[in-house]
Image (tube, rainbow, N blue to C red):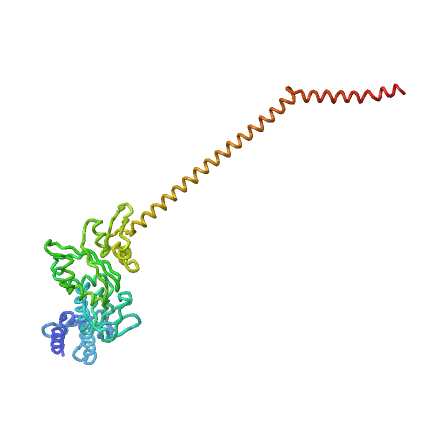
Length: 390
């Protein structure tokens, strides 16, 4: 039986392309655990000679007489180790493919998750977050996706795929454009809204190679195959520049730019366009300006010259209105103070004049007092005369 184990291990190792030593260690561990459980031994040590196939044990145990127990343990150990070894081999294989495109077939659906058959009894998972909303999949459809992540979960392997990641576009260009694969043309930056639009900034290290033309291809053959793979997603290829104004102008293409004003402190860019270029610069639902802003790192504000003049006029009007309100308030306050002072002064003057006239100038008060006194005296004397008459 020991010789049969050696032949079986050698056959499995060559067929499955796995480590033979790992199989031996798994067999030793499984048989040792089975014997320790049967005989109640905690310190049992068991090894298998790799050349002769003989068992070596620190206890006197007749392994050849174990029969079914030994055979079952060896079988389970080999099956387990083979699975782990295959998983490790596949893990190394697919880990090296992270960021690369793989081909598969849609196999089944679980809710919003698509399971893709990748061959070698391996399945990839295309979760909802990595799908493109506009794409519809059916059982048996051929699909190309990028390997995003690889995980070991117990004896199984979990391969997560993506169709929505921006690097999927990078991989497609590397496959279709030899100059990119040869590093003559470099993809500097990619911004993408999956299923709708992608902006790709490229730069050529060789002045004789047109980076944009090479990516488009003769009569658009290269870019057309990529657009077909992305189910009609629009792709804008722009020329990279280290100058911010030039980069912004290129990023907003196909719109023509009239003027660009940069504010480095706030990282804002004011872009002026003609009236007929405004909708083209903004794009459908703002996609063009939004992707351009992400690509350049500037907050872009697009206006026509008429809109800019109107905005400036409104700001000037608001400032003038504020100044006029402040001047009127000051004048009103000053007038109120002057009126109050004048009114108080006039009243005081009139009061002083009346008092002065009544006392000193006209003698009105003195005459009146005298007349009143005379009248009083006359009234007082009349009864006396009348009494005397009687």
